[in-house]
Length: 480
Image 1 (cartoon, helix red, strand yellow):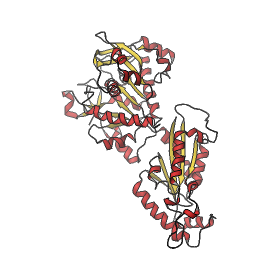
Image 2 (image 1 turned 180 degrees about the vertical axis):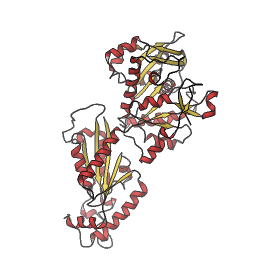
Image 3 (image 1 turned 45 degrees about the vertical axis):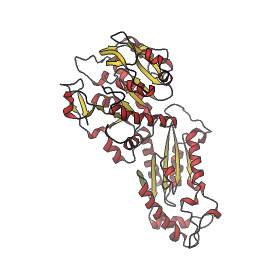
Image 4 (image 1 turned 180 degrees about the horizontal axis):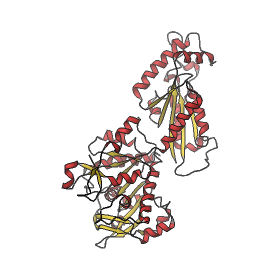
């Protein structure tokens, strides 16, 4: 299950309540509305200005603490808010439950605004607003001159404050038809549900032949691997501040740690990974699903983070394709849940996994380390060229963290003739299913960029890969 919080705000009589109700009706089994108007204080508690006007258009006229309690209750148990009494037609890990928050000052209250994934604000001209306001009957009724003496001036003041503190609000023309407004918002919300961004952490350049092109890199095969499953890629440089990484984390839906040869404790790659690892632990603890995948050295780094130290030993399996020695934990695993039985059989008998490593985590080391045993479940092992048995596939017991010592991306996206990349039909299917699995894990995250412009500037498409097939094992590499 994942959740999406949609804010529908706007000026008085702009149509926000109607739009929120219609959107909820389009999502009848998965959404509910929390309306700000339900949290007004008693009339006797609302301040009065020097003109004798009740100050209803200020935050202090509302029980915002009670509204936040209601929103927090939804976050803890969103199904209990559904009209059907907590059930949906289909309950699965891809179920999406939507909270629609509606009100005239929802974007002016920072703790509430920070929870929202999508924000819409309905606006209409002064004349139309006044006409609609004056045609409605309020309890208590508006006194003479109330619109021009309080409502409109407060709207302008609140609007200015909102624009100074909030980004990413979509302004909607409240004069458009109800059907047109609903169609736009519904399509936009649906697109957000399917809009994914997986980040790939750049790796430090170690090979002399690559140093003229940049200090960090991402092989194009990893980018294509993620894109093939329906997600776009956001590269993460190793030179940003912790604050910048925290902002990126709130914008992406998953993290891929690629292979390489950096130090697991002292390198910039390890340092930046620790930042995202800490954020991911906290997010998942708070019910904010965020997956991490580690390939080859990425797996090794995940074990170091869980154990608090590097536990690598020599487990050479260089340029060799192997079948997996599957453990008894596979049938109950998440990673292989969607694999057909015949492919699992092939995975255990055919050389479908490309290995290109010198070090790894032996099963003996894993068994002797309590922190590793408690954090991860071993799904497969393999035997290295020196006879050491190493962990080749694992997944987190509690957290959506996954690691493979082998390289699923090479099965479809690397072609060097002298390297043993598995390209059989079964090898391609394994690669495809694992990519889809990880991206589907990302679909359970609703992190997003504040604006489309910020998102566009962060994507991998802003960079041009270099043809490196003559001097590396990769056809193309992105350098940074």
